[in-house]
Image (tube, rainbow, N blue to C red):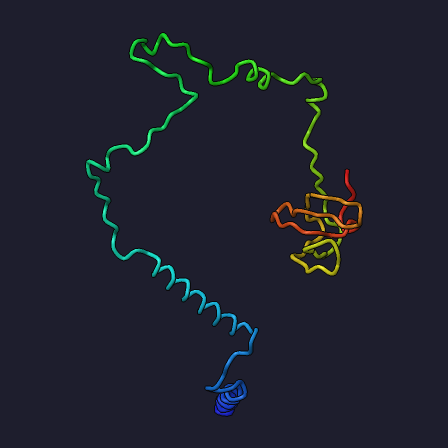
Length: 189
C-alpha cells in the first residue's frame, strides 16, 4: 500500500509540474510572482545606483594659498553699533535686543475667570464602534475602498463630522485614519 501512495504522490507532483508550465513557466502579468520579480529588479537597480553614486576615492582637501586666505568681501552690519578706537566699548550706549514692554505684555497671564479655566478640558470626541465588524474606508462613501476593519467596542476619535452621515475617524489603538458611517458608532457625549 505504501508503494501505491508513493507512486501516486510522484505522479501527482509530476502532473502538477507539467500542467503549470514545466521548465517553460512564466508568471502571469500582475501575479505575485511577477511582482516579486519586478521588485527584485528594482532593488538591484537601486543597489547599483547607490554603489555608483558613492565616491570611490576620498576627495583631496583644498589647498589654501596666501592669496586665497585674503577676504574677498567685507560684510557690514548696519544695525550693529560701531566701536571706535577713541571710546571704549563699555561706554557706548547699548540698545536692547528685545522690547521689554512687548515681552511683558506677551508673557502676562490672560485675565480669565479661574473657575471656568479649572473646568476647561480639551474637547476630544472619543466614541466606540457598535457594529460587529465594520469597514473603515478611505473616503466618505461605500464607493471608497476599505482600509481596515473594526470590531464592536473599538475606540475611535472623531476628527470631523460634516453632518452628511460620514465621520472622519482616527482609531485610538492603531492611529489609522479613515471614514465610517455615523450610525455604526456611539453618539457623541
